[in-house]
Image 1 (cartoon, rainbow, N blue to C red):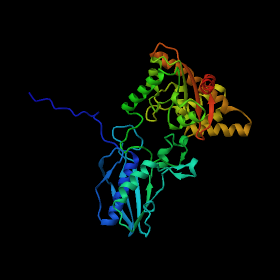
Image 2: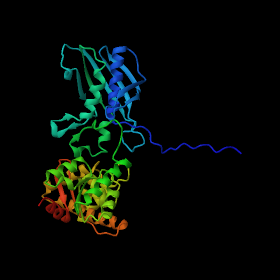
Image 3: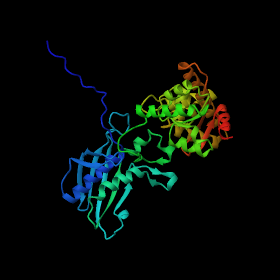
Image 4: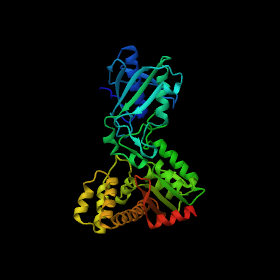
Length: 384
C-alpha cells in the first residue's frame, strides 16, 4: 500500500516585507550596478527593525547613463491581504562626486511617479521616517568619501492603487506612502494584532464604561484633538467586528465610533469587515441613502458613477452649493443613524447585552461630516 504523502501546510506563514524594504533593495541594486558594473539577482540589507539581514530578489537593473541606474523589485507582503502584492518598485540612483563632508547631504531621497504627497506638509513626499532611515543606513556603507547619490523612488502603479485606499483621508494624495515602523509586513489583519487590541480593550474596560473606537491613526489623532481622553481610545484597525463583540462581553455601556466615512459607511450596509479586500458596496450604500431622502434619479446616477465615496461626498457638496440644498447633511445623517442601529443589532446577535452606539464620520479634509444623535451625546459626555 503506498504511503500517504505528507501534505504541505499551505497556511504556513510566508515571509513578507513592507514597501520601504523593496524600495531600499532596488536602490542598493542600482547603486551596486553603477559601482561594480554588474547586475545583482539578489541584494542583502539590514531591516534595522527588527535587527535582521534579509535577501530580496531583483527583477531588473540597467544603466540609464554613465552616472544613473534603475533597478526594479516586486512587492511581496507574504501571506497577508495587501493590494501592493507584486507591485513594481523602481529606484533610480544618480551617482555624483561631491566634496561635502556632511553625511546628511550624501544621500538625497525623493519621490517620483506614484509616491504620494503630504498635503498637510507642503506636499512633501510621503517617504516616512522608517523608510528614510532604512535607505540611508543601507546605502551609506557603499559610498566612497566623495560620493553623493540622489535616490528617486518610483511606484508606477501608485496612483491607481491609491484610489483603493484611504490614503486621502490621511492627507496623502497622488500615490502610495512609504510607510511603516518595521521591515516585516504585519498588516492590520494580523491575528497577533487582534489579540493585542483585545487585551488593551479588556484593561480599559476595567477603568471606563465608555470607549471610543478609532479605525486608524487619523481617527485617533482627530479624537485626541477634539478633547477626548486618550485613555478611552481604542484603535481597531480592520478588527472592528471582533472588538465590538469583545466590548459587549466586557460590559462596556457605550461606544463612540470615530472614523473616515469611506470606512464606516460599510457598517450602514451591515458590512463589518472593513478591510478593502473583504466586501465593498460603499457607493451602493451611499446611493441607497440618497434614495431614502428622495434624491432625483439624475443625482443618484452621478453618485453611482463616482469612483470613491469621497468623490460622492464632494459631488453632494457641489450640488448643495449650486442649488442651495442640504443633501449632504440629509444623506450623511441617514448614514450615521443607520450605522448606530446596524451596529447595535450586530452586537446583539452575538452577545445578550445592550451597548449604546454613537458614530462620527470625517472626510479627507480631516473635518467632521456628521455625528449621529447618540454620537453627539457621547462626545459631549467624553469631553465635559
